[in-house]
Length: 223
Ligand code: GRF
Image 1 (cartoon, rainbow, N blue to C red):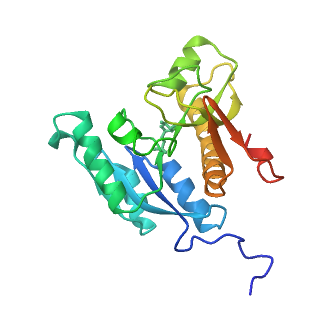
Image 2: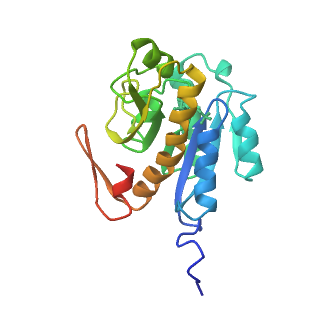
Image 3: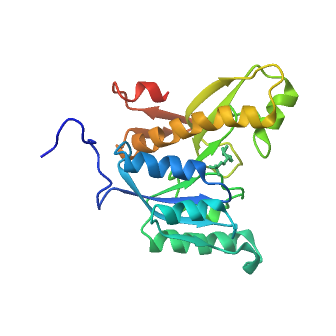
């Protein structure tokens, strides 16, 4: 029996299996894990893979009792070989959708092709402005009044694939990189789980550069 207070969705067996690739802090990973725990995201994190041994994201995964592993890039001479090893792990854990959550590494076609339109990235700028590293610093140096985050499908160009959702934040006079990053990060934490839920519900379709979102009352706020 379900009471009204109980979450509508449960991270049950059979829910969308996520593979989350990380490099650092892992606050976006935690936002995903929290959304699952709260019943707002009908998915499970099948595996977390880090390319950095000491990534705090690995500790966060452990706290949520989610399988997590470090794959050492220095053991592979080419990016493609590393991605083949990542791919093998994703397959072993039955991953259906890959999330790049603060993954500071370029992904190659070795990974992108088998997961075509099934890799989602979060980037801390309003793409196509300020792709690449240090997006917040780039935004401040350029003098923009508005920045934000972009959740997009990954294609073979960096920070380029079809845009699913964006959220804007103001840039204030005298903002530091840390202040702007924090403001953007709060939007990433809100938007990324929402986008993943749209995917889990089969509401996203990709048509060239355009992503169509099947409308419902609950999805309008994610746009
Ligand atoms: C996020 O702002 C993400 O967009 C960028 O790096 C940050 C990662 O933060 N690529 P975290 O590791 O999820 O805390």
